[in-house]
Image 1 (spheres, rainbow, N blue to C red):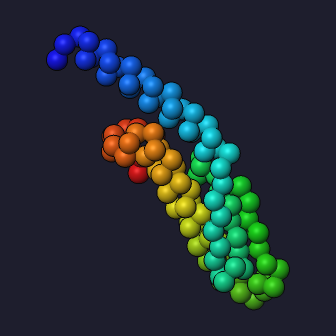
Image 2 (image 1 turned 180 degrees about the vertical axis):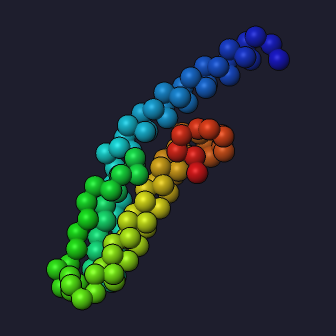
Length: 108
């Protein structure tokens, strides 16, 4: 491998790194939503895998059945985080050309 090929490859890697940084910044602003319990709980998460919002239908707030509400909230949170991970992986795949690069952020 000559130096010309090595320089070309390094420039491509640097370009990919810049594009990935840009995508990561954009993902911080993108959100996904998940519901559970037939829509009784809605959770919104962002591309940083942060829960931004939880909406609970007041009709399910029965003090006698708090455990059920907790389970529904947990299910919605987990689904929202899975959706966020899928969104990140999809956006990063656009930059990396679907290469599975170990240690690259956003590659699941």
